[in-house]
Length: 165
Image 1 (cartoon, rainbow, N blue to C red):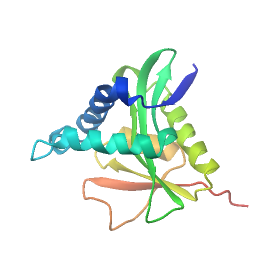
Image 2 (cartoon, rainbow, N blue to C red):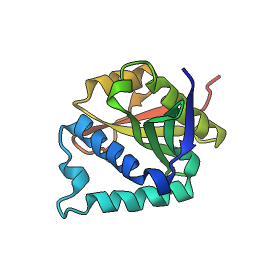
Image 3 (cartoon, one colour):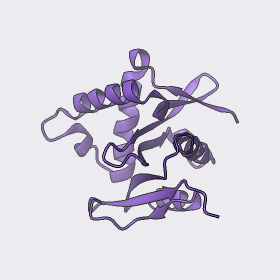
């Protein structure tokens, strides 16, 4: 199975990117309320963020293609406050493509991207209740990182990108 990773085409796929992000909240937290926002501006706030992220870091904010079909999405940034740290905001696969071994390719893509940028580590947050995701990340070399910055409902995971001799 050959996957392609292409920067999110905002002219054509902004609504799809938004739908993927919304679904990620439903899958992770069984609730989209945080995505929608208490003020009802969550969708427009998200769209402003993703437009900015794609503009600033297109190779880190991509749709995942299987042939001509978009089956997933990755959103990531390099932390401004810690220039040697990459951060994954979203790993996403459509429901029918989950649990088929494809997640490792998304992880491999982002790991290689950040290694090429000479970053030391990459981090992400995962819902404490998402046992399948936690198991997956551990199997890909991610480790829980104790942090005061972690929201109560999430765990902070980190993957070391620097080879140890």
